[in-house]
Amino acid sequence: MLPGVSLPCFLGMYGHDLAPNPLSGAGPRHLDPVEIYAPMLRARELGYRAMRIWLCEGAEGILINRDVISGVHPVLIESLAVIQESAALSGLRIYWTLLDGHSVRRTNDVVTRAILIEPEHTARFAEMVAAPIASRLDPRVMVAIEAANEPEALMENDDGWPGCANAIRTIAGAIRSVSAGALVTSGMDRAMAPALWKNAPGLDAIDIHAKGEHPLPSRAEIMRELALEQAKSLPLIGGCHGDFVSQPHREDYDAIFRWRLETEA
Amino acid sequence: MRFATLPDASDMSAFASNFAPLEESSRLTRPLSRFALQLTVYCNLKCKMCSVWEIRKHGVPLELAEQLLRDAYELGAREFVPTGAESFMRKDFVEIVEYAHALGYWHQSIVTNGTMIDGDDFDRLARCPSIKLNISIDGPREIHDELRGAGNYDKSVATARECIRRGIDVGLSGVILRESLPHVTALIDLAAEIGVRGVSYQPFQIEIAGAHKDIPRFSLASIERETIASALKNLSRYAVSKNISIFTEPLFGEIPDYLLFDKRPIPSGGCSLPSTMLLVDWKGDVYPCFFMWTNKDRMGNVYRDRLTDIWHSRMHKQMQMLALSERCPGCLAACSDVRTYAANSH
Image (cartoon, rainbow over all chains, first blue to last red; front, side, top):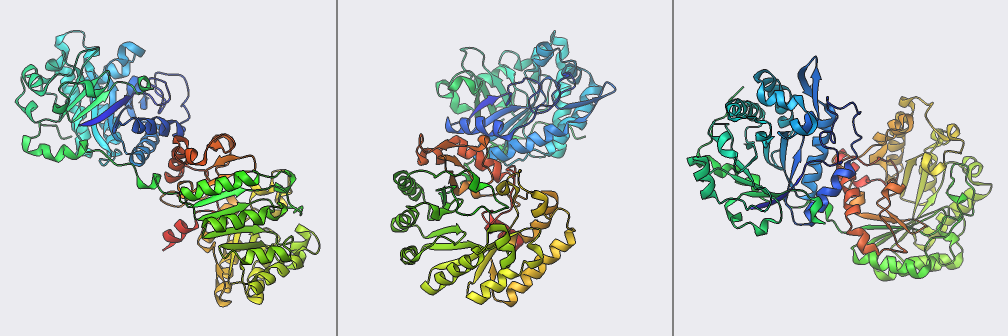
């Protein structure tokens, strides 16, 4: 089991740390590699062997032209290079997260909402952002690429799940078209995961998040809850608070990511 | 676009490697190799292209210098680079290099103007075969003395001759300046004449000169690139014809752009110097190399921190990562990662 830690933002700005985003009037933050090296080295010192990093949360790094997605910001591409080099040097694998479902409510992020709900924007994001990013991700340091973290956060009712699953499937397809070996995931709260999986999102691994003090479920429980035969053998990733050692079913998981490095001091 | 299908269970073994732990790069865990200690920034000369002598301070006291040498040796260092301004301005300087030799350092490379070494010093240096003196010569006598003061060329050359006579390893070091470029082969002639087998050249450094100096006088910025490149090419050929080796020759290809455009190269694949060396300056501050020497690069201070702790610190790893990922400031000097340049050129 690969022990990991989530580090959504390197420079402390949700939605705007590795590149500018179209929803923020602020200019691009200067990317000082040292600010990336430090938390990675610290995570390694604490015994973590992988890190989950968010890229396009809050529309960060997505270029918009005349109200449509037109590409990925070059600063984000440069950030990928810094992160991957430092990961390889420090001995960390990277679990890349593209979108965050919470950004819609958190930052009034209409871009992420459009990507996950409107097929035209999904396709543009998939081809012009997800694929170019995936093509620059080195498989030697990669755990997986998460198309969207907790997309349930923007679901207003169950009617939206087929569309959401379709969006994730589209993004996953674009990723695989340029990175054949990439595992594509979408991490979800345990209670919401069945809603996505029953709509065949086309994912390569299961990522289950346990909230609060709840433990991560066993693989048998996941198989039952998702009603998915493949869950018996699909790679299993967990996200939780607290130390993975306290997880009773940790042996069922290929990787467990603790939420936030900052709490480890 | 290819849409995904769930992979078969039989394909899952292919993903196992996605979850295999990676090892920390061995490039981050190399032993210390070179320990540089700025013992003094006093100098007996007031060279026109240098401002280091203006600081006028000595570095760490003898006892601490010896402690640092011991700590560095335990970390793996076998090369000691005492540095200055002029190291021989310290009365205990020879005692320090004798101590390093006795500890087991294999190489000690001392850059000196060669004007202060007396008979007793020669005797003591000769008993330490780990020591190599690199005597600074800036060109023919008239250029050298104009920059460094009348009579100093002859003193420096006399020191080089005496080293050879006594079997002390010696090299000649030249700086390529605007006024020395037309005479750049003079150092080769001198080396051949007195029996020195190796020389080094490094380009004029604004950092060493200081911004308040007459930079246009020394800078080659107004000289055509082809002229510089041609002079260096001829220099290489001339050195071969005289059977003199140029230690810094692997850097020559980078020099024209450095001089003309201030392009500070980094060896392809990154610079490994911060992974193998430490520099302690006269204040006791510790830096990863001679060109990562700003407040931002300071990793600790030997009056407060143990060298061993600094070497194993996260800050040191950060500095290493900057250099290994080709994000350090870059440089071009005799202290640069010449070995990597040489390897890349092959």
